[in-house]
Amino acid sequence: MQVNVLRSKLDVGEAAARHAAQSLLRVLGHSEVARIIAATGASQLDFLDSLTSIPGIDWQRVEMFHLDEYIGIPATHAASFRKYLMERFIQKTGIRRYHLLDGEQDPADVIRVIGRELKSAPVDIAFVGIGENGHLAFNDPPADFETDEPYLIVGLDEACRRQQVTEGWFGTVSEVPLRAISMSVKQILKANEIIAVVPGARKARAVKACLEGQISPLAPASILRTHSNTTAYLDTDSASLLTEATIRST
Figure 1: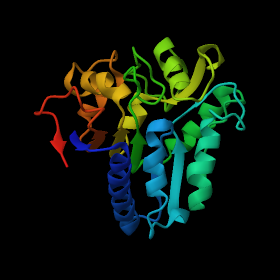
Figure 2 (figure 1 turned 60 degrees about the vertical axis):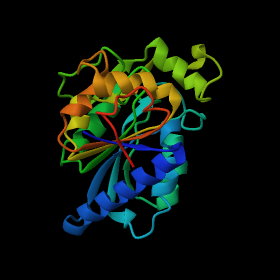
Figure 3 (figure 1 turned 180 degrees about the vertical axis):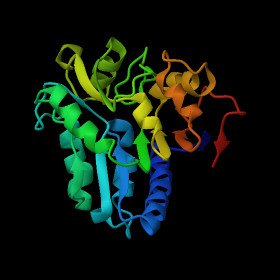
Figure 4 (figure 1 turned 90 degrees about the vertical axis):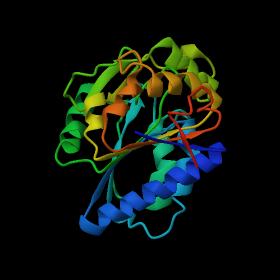
């Protein structure tokens, strides 16, 4: 894993977006379609804002898959990741090929249909974050590192639910759904390239555990270190607990 540390959250978003754009253009240079996985959440705001502003990407040739979604909240809810992606990515780029996880429908049907589409061809690039509890997508600890299913129905732990309140998506922990649909860990690792965008002081402990601790289901995003083409973008706050041996400042 390559680790890049930037001065600010905005710098992280811009640097990761430049990297993502270069990777997309490279894929589109030799393939008709680039298949990507899109992450959401507060940590991805600057990244998506920068990426959607970069000219020259033929978004009509990009196919997007949704990383995770709450079960039971409507697409009009402020915390809905469908709403997030529609407003911050799909409508801004005009992308037409996208597969959103509908948390209001039968989740078993949703993961079967979209999982079949996801498995139909390789994924070129996955954009991900790391949660305050080390989660990857909504795979909270202890994460399932073994299943080959593309999507899972998962329970959200207390730390994960508190994070959603802290970031302002919900008013209280009791409002945060107990269950979600999440792409599986193994499915994320099947992407040819992974770009992890992880700014903010609240992520420092998770970053330390996942980048320098044992690779373990108890630190789900630690599994990213086993992938041959993963780059993490951190700011000085999220990287504050790392040793110099782990980071390459840019």
